[in-house]
Image (cartoon, rainbow over all chains, first blue to last red; front, side):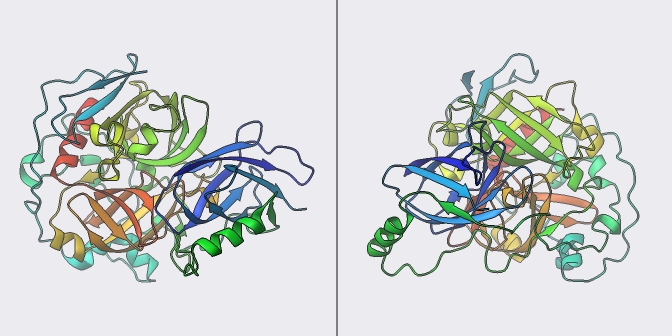
Length: 84
Length: 368
């Protein structure tokens, strides 16, 4: 199990607050709870099992994006940046 | 927040956050170990009827005999009145007719407005991670879905109708400041049932600082208002044992916000394996991948079960933790489980067995 500390940035590198993040695919069981980013764009994925995951990121203004990532992560971090 | 525990007899022993201003913190009597008996329920339910309006409409069929929506009725004062006959919570407000226009025939299948566009990148070492993953799991070629296969979830267009108005959006503020989105459902005027991990977050400080509860939330609309709750319940098996089998809990709303009186409430029951495996069940909640502010539902049969868990191929996503797993019988909605988990072998939830039902009854009385 690994807790992932994440950061969500806009295309200009600014943090995005109040985005909703939700696991939509998983190779291992995960709690079906969604996470929200704080004012600094940070979020946490608690106690993630080893596996491969697809994460849906929905900024407060809409325009959802999906990203895939794997756990464990070498540094326990997941830094995401929206494309223009 | 302190934790109060009620006689540790088994994993279902009640554990409570200790907030003094919400009422309902006082437990009467003591808890003994519950039997795990199922099957004492009335099992004469017609299969077609148990499909419910939701499933019938999903399949494009009509559901004859349903009457237009009526206004919510006042809850009965004593929610225990009918336990003796059906072994389930018997809620007069839940007996109201639900209109056939609950879904209005819209059957929305699309993503949320603005969803799906653009891209996103992992900054850093993703290619290396992907290579390492492939090396570690050479046979892992597919990503199993929480949304299983095609996404068949449908949006609930009007949450003012029962039972959707009795389903609540939760914004959970953990003690350490982190925020999460989950789902709950009302079983009495001030009692919301949800997943244990929505009311006790092991990696975020335990009991939350507060949970914002919004019945029938629909986008930016909160048709029944919202309130901040600080009184929570779960069981030893979750709080101390962190066992998925005991992943359930409750929120006791402030006395100033008896939402269930206006929304109506779910019934709940413990059924036999045979009965559960015959039923189509619905899950309705607030998936985060759709923004976490709109209700979506999906219905399928229960695929597998144990004494404590239900497993199904019903599509869900993060944010739907705590959603009711329910079916329709007549004009009632009967919850048989609490959704908790996305899993590679099917999504799953906590089964309402006799022990869980007893705790739900207890919490319902607290919030009556």
